[in-house]
Image (tube, rainbow, N blue to C red; front, top):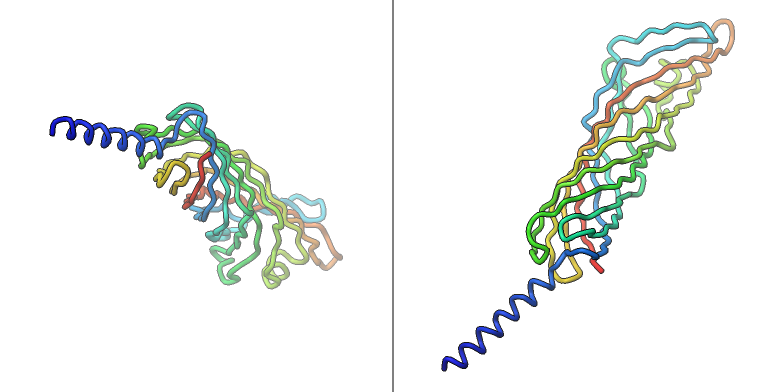
Length: 243
């Protein structure tokens, strides 16, 4: 009877260790994940600033004006590598989401003013808690993102003609920004896992507007700028496969 119990206990112990190994996230592991990325800007903006018209300096802001940025969703892909059982590097990027730009203050009556597509790939260094064999592993991370926009355009003709004064070209600045990250993974098997993370990216962008402004003396070039603090909170819900 004792021999039978000993054999049974040894088998159970072996199964326990085998089950733990099946969920390992350890040094040398490479993984990929994909899922839903939600960007929620915590935006604020300065008033629209007029630099000049036809080469004549103006250098004044327009009181009670501003712009806001909508939330956006996209599909993201991440790849990572465990340097040790607890330290991993990760690169994440998504299909550029479209952001709607809305008016604030006296511009709010126009609703949506324009749109732009954001690119913000990020490189992260993450520290995982708990044992490498644990199913549930929370982590914290820090990294950097390079952010730029494409397809920036004024889409509201009433705003473009009534406020800016004519056809307008929009350009945005490019920025490096830090990324502060926290999340967790849950390992279903040796290879498959699900995860959730939340990141905060403190970043501002400057939009420059060049307008062919219609005046009594003809068409003159007007330059104006808008400074917007985006500071998005980014959530990432994903499934992944570990090699």
